[in-house]
Length: 117
Image 1 (cartoon, rainbow, N blue to C red):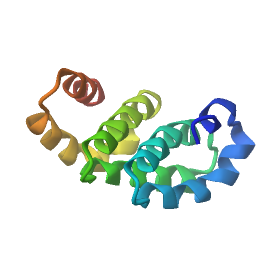
Image 2 (image 1 turned 90 degrees about the vertical axis):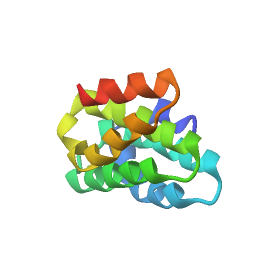
Image 3 (image 1 turned 30 degrees about the vertical axis):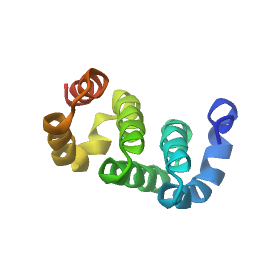
Image 4 (image 1 turned 180 degrees about the vertical axis):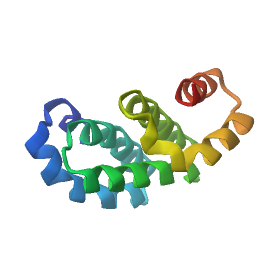
């Protein structure tokens, strides 16, 4: 999954998005983290609006993950996707604001402020 983000193109993105969705709910946190990172590239490269909506929904759901590292990966992916299209994550704004209150480290605060501005 790590190398897919580097070699993916538009055609590959439309084929792979369905295969990545089950990885968001994998029992291993490292797989969920990598799925969030790959979702960023898939959203950027995909031309299918339905695929983008699904990936955005699954990435936003990872903000509520029990593992902190998965939450941070989701924040990073959301920050990068929001630079391209900030309207995609309007549904996640309440959770993002709640995370600002809960954040204890500077990196998370900077990313959250970056998303919200």
